[in-house]
Structures are given as structure tokens and as C-alpha cells.
Image (cartoon, rainbow, N blue to C red; front, side):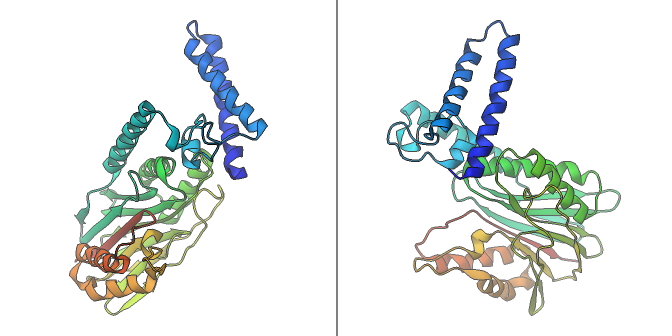
Length: 328
């Protein structure tokens, strides 16, 4: 495993060991706790011996995402028992259901804005983060967020849920967008239980057509106006890299018919069978041809352009596209 991941897991195991010892001291019935303590000590011993993260059956590497989610894992997916496989499938189904439950409605109209998005997980769960928060007071507005946690699988999906909780909590404090992203970055960095980070675009759409956008190391959002497209470049590093990151927000006046499009790199970095990337130029081309028809049509046209480009090639990453159009 990478050094940063193993260092994190060791710290996590040591913390878990300390908590188990304290719990055993306070408990009269501690057989289960003692067994767990033995498993933690065995994992730490494997680290000292240099065998941690190696499947005990085939001696190949255990999936890193599973180790981050459960540091006591000792077998790769190919060598789980039937009961363990069934349990893992149930856990994945539950995680997928919970993640879907956190997503906003696919289409939203609010105070002169029309928002539509497409969310395509690569597997059962996704490392993409997508949310909309309607603000009624002190003035009507709409917060929107699209992010991408590094890595894939359950560990990444857990961090998207963490981002969801962080931003839902901070929006209530009525911070400016730049401050909102900055505070979220600090909380995410200090509370995250993994070495992962997250790129993100956060913004607010106001009643008079004013949009504030802050880009934390994410793919540049595209602002489509008539026959031109402009990019909103990053104003800071991805969340999780530094607890002292500073972010500013760009203010844009969006007129009726204009559209702001945010996407994850699962769109632009999608490759066809010849290894060619879809790329930003094709995204822009698909936007310019349908921008006047509204947010939903624009998202669908972008996906419609991607499908023939990919042909029989599958997606290689989670994919999210969000369009924020001013309708009045």
C-alpha cells in the first residue's frame, strides 16, 4: 500500500486499540471486545512484519479501498467465503441506497432558475458529490455543489456523505460562497478518516441572476452565453489537502437563456476503444448546440454526444453533469 495510506491505517488501528482497551476495562462481558482487540493486534503485527494488505490465501494485494473502509480485512474479494460475499453485497446495496437518498431531485425549478443533473456511478456507489440546497431567508437563493472524491468505491462514497453533511450544516450559517468552501475545506481536512481529497465547485444562484462560484481544484465550470463559452478556473486547492486553504468566489451575471455547467472528470476523461478522451472541446460543442433549450435538454444532449463517442467502451470513472439555467 502507499505509505500515506498505511500510516493512516496504523493510526486508525492504534486509536481503535486504545478505545477497545478502555471499553474492556469498563465492561463485565468483554469476550467480543477481547476478540476484536486480538484482531487489531494481529493487524498491527502484520504491519510490523511487512505482510499487511496481503491476502492470506493467494498472497496478492487486498483492495486498498476495502482496507481503508475496514483495516481488519485479511482476504481479497476473490477469496471471501460465500457468507462474506453475501454480507458484502448487502452492505453495498445498503450503501448505494443511502447514497441515492442523499441526492437532490433530478430537476428543480426555483425563483427563476432551472437545474438539472445526471449522476452515473461507475459501480454500486460513487465518489462524486452532488447537492442542491434551497435558501428562502434572508433572501431567496439556491446553493449548488458538484465534487469528486479521489478514489472509488465505498470509502469514497462515505466521504461524499461527509461532504453532504458538512455543506448542509455550513449553509445555515449564511456564509459567503468563498468562506463557505473555505470552512468546509477546514472541517473536511480535520475530520476526514482517510488520506483522500476532494475537488469541488460550490456556488449560489441569486434571484437577480447573480451567481457566485468557487472552484476548489475542480474541472473548470463552463458558462454558456449565446454563441460563446467561458471557463471558471480554480481559485484554490482541493479540499482535504490543507486545513488553511483560502478560496475566493467569482461573481457572474447570468442573463435569461445563459447556462452554467459543472461536471466531473468522468465526462471529459471518458475514453473510447481507441484510447481517445472525450475532452472539453466535445463538451463545449454539445453545449453550444442545445443551450437555448434549457438545463434538462442540455444535460441529455451532452450524454447523447458521449454515447456514440464511447461506442462499446465502458465508462472508467463516476460521471456527474449539472446545468444551472436562468429561465427568467
